[in-house]
View 1: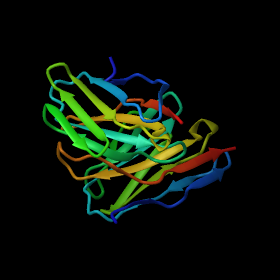
View 2: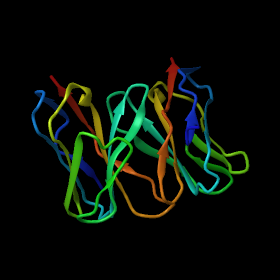
View 3: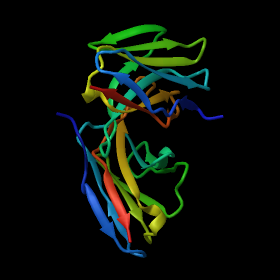
View 4: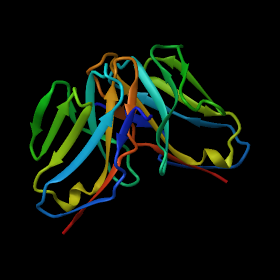
Length: 109
Length: 113
């Protein structure tokens, strides 16, 4: 079983819609969780981090964490074409850092 | 602005060449990492270092070595480049501890011909 699993997509949403990206992880001692955005041909860029159960909002982005279900998600409100990218979920257990393989998001104008 | 800088954005090398990929960070981070990223395979850890002169093998160290002589610099060495090492190479760094994410360099797209 992979440490971090994401649907590879592609996920397509119309401009202005909410994009929902999901991630599950296997290690119950995981401490912190991160979302990275990666444009084609570029390196990953950190966009959100979350450490506690519940929601964390930053502009159009909301990260949601449910440690009991070992589930973390990223919501992008009012999606824009510039949000089209691959989104990587990452988990820090304190000893190791694990990445999912990413979900490709396309926002259709 | 804090940075992780990789020396080359694109690199083309011949099979059998010795290849050096350089990474420098200005954030005083203890931890540094080298990954390669291939379509469908995600990020795969090659080597990492938690301190100067310290190195640990990651998941796919074969055919690679590393050097960390100074805290800010972590070099990846392909001893004898092969075509299956054609990939995007990403350097990253972070502060130790469970709350810290990685900062990535801009990546080096290496093609071995």
